[in-house]
Length: 451
Image (cartoon, rainbow, N blue to C red; front, side):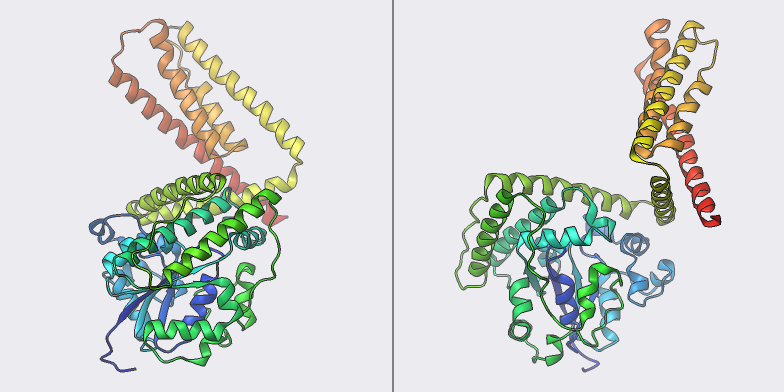
């Protein structure tokens, strides 16, 4: 490749478990293509001005840990001196093989296609779709070894993602934006034919290496079992197995997949303008709505990750890993009935302590401090429960502490005094509860290591 090459942008979009990683590995076999693997640089739901604040790289890396995976300086502050924007990262990654096409593959890009087209009007976009029943079966298998896929409502998330991608593709192609559409089934059945289509779309010569994964650069991809098929050195489909779903849902998903294929056929034709998609079945539509809510919740979480100090995020993640490991150890030591009994007894003691503190505070007209009776509940919730219960009991204790005098001997207290006391007391109790939570996790981990 010429050192004076003109860089072009390429992005791969598709729902998780729909073949995006396999397509990524195939594309990167071509000497003219160098895509980054899931840095998620284009899916931060924040305005460009906020995205490019001085610590943007630290925060973006805190989300996906992509610097180390791609061989960049693992210290974001050092890397930030060289990379002022995502385009700099793309270019630096492509320079290693003097590639022409740069960009990224990410399973979240399907939700940001209009923004992507606006920011890179000359970019090429390749989408890949898969039968939603097969996607969900793959999710169920991946959930056995990867906790991310064990989350609730994963079917709804995938249905929303594929529907959003189709709707946005119709919108963009009606505006004249060219997008190439693939399906997992066609790509795995005839890799050479589909790779030739890709090369024609990109305007680059066909390279036979794209039809195999032998010698593919999989360094940015984790070696967990969820990517086991990628390491088989060939492009092949997973066995067709029905997911664990009622027959009614299997029939609905098959009908929905036929609707998707019809839409993809129209998107790949010369028909313009494209008509809007007909609404899906009522149950599918309801599932898509739930998936949209979960997607929006993830966007807000990503927004917070982008704005919070990177050091805070690192401490939070380290604590989260510590807590998860501790909970796993504790779950092995007690049966479900024992855990239920401990939870009920602890909850009863916590509520009795809060009630006792409120009673003493009210009966003494403020002369007796209820603080010990409110500290015990949050320490106990941190020791025996999790962060949800810590927040709940902190708020309950702060409310009893604040509203007790109002309901008895100080009914005229101003609203700002009430708000300030509830907030400040909740924060203090919350910190104590989280401290107990962290302390217990640390002790469990150390004890388990000694054993």
